[in-house]
Length: 128
Image 1: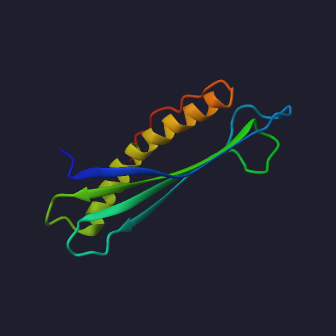
Image 2: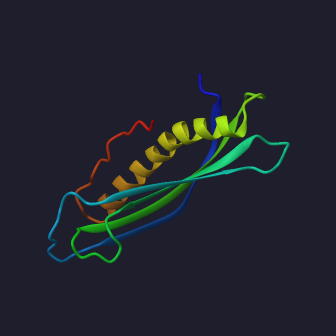
């Protein structure tokens, strides 16, 4: 049983640019993932914010069919009183990234579909 709980998820940023010109590369588009963990400084609340940023393609590159950038964040709490912030961070980064990535998968699919492109289904990922 997990000792963390996702309290809420929020979309912070989403950007999409479609390249309507013929492109050199239609596959092997670079993907970049970044996280940022920020614990709540309050002594009364045991929670933290985890942000997940995903960038697919290159913003000013004409070599790819599209550029996509999304940043989502979640507020995660933990219930084990004796759990240190370091232990909570490890658990949140592992489980939280899976939760946030599932939201990114949905937004990405919907964005490509709305742009009139063939939707791409990002595969599920288990973060270790």
